[in-house]
Image (tube, rainbow, N blue to C red; front, side):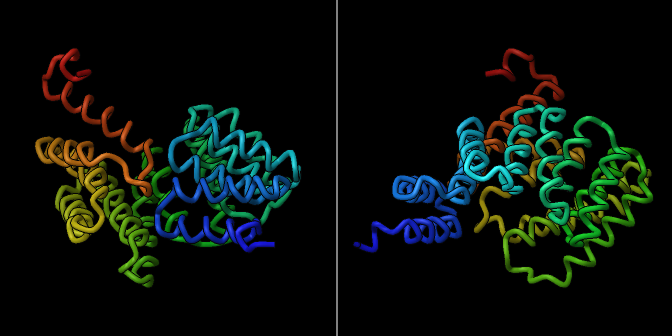
Length: 288
């Protein structure tokens, strides 16, 4: 048998392509693996995750359903289906999938955190915090701390939010700063911390942390062009609408790369339209 006829070779190829942010190519490799061995639930699940990254949610659900059909006790596939349903705006419907994932494997933090995200969308903040705390009891990560802080911020529990964001930032300081994901997490933590201080009326602290977030994004803007989207969010929160609009327009003109979710591009258009209306542009012009 030729090595190219081995499903494992195509799965390995897809994994490498994903690390290179070549998501479309990775999906083609997953497709080839599935042609050779259609009963591999983990490959269906992986392809679904890649499709979700591209914003192809209906296709992603088909993949997760196939993975679940092959292995009904595949907790990760149940969780991923819930994440996709949540992304489609059906928070209440997603809860059942997260509960199924938790029933299969209650020690997986992603399922608890994702259920918390759904409860947050439903404005059931206390329950959302409880789920995130459960996830944190399994594995304490800066992202989970950020998530908890964000829920507290949304629930106007500003002092508690500040403490959690401070803890997230201290944790992130121990991680390498070269990686894109760590930079983004640090910048986001400073941004959320700034929002909490702004909510309390602590203007100086808010400005200081907004600037720290901006500095992180600015420092890597040449390499990570899509960070313009996040910069726009920070400047909008600061009240600097002209710069927010500038970065949004630059982001939109670049378009999404393989590594950048199409969801962000849609959000960017919506965000820009909202800002234009807020700045007195007629609704018809903003829609254009």
